[in-house]
Length: 102
Picture 1 (cartoon, rainbow, N blue to C red):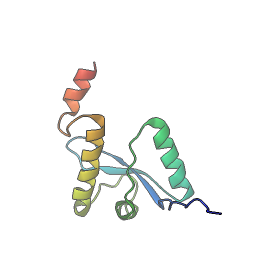
Picture 2: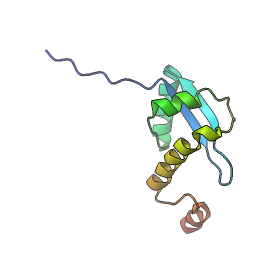
Picture 3: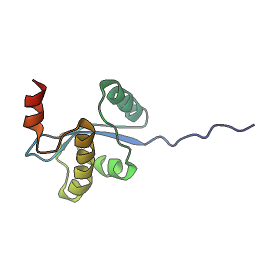
């Protein structure tokens, strides 16, 4: 009898906040069970989730409310570009999108 394959669960979940003209900051982080709870909550709220174990591990070394280091700018910029794409907007069109939603 074949057993279903188990998928590896990401060890860390990291929440980032990005405000225009400021580097992203770590606003939440959790490991194992807390990471799973964070993923479930994000899904329920419609927050995009991207699984990147290497980036999550690197971000896990940061403190809460700490800005991401310059060494991670490219990786986080790629993540943010993906989020903007999902939302149907360009990174520099935050105000334009907000105005068109009114």
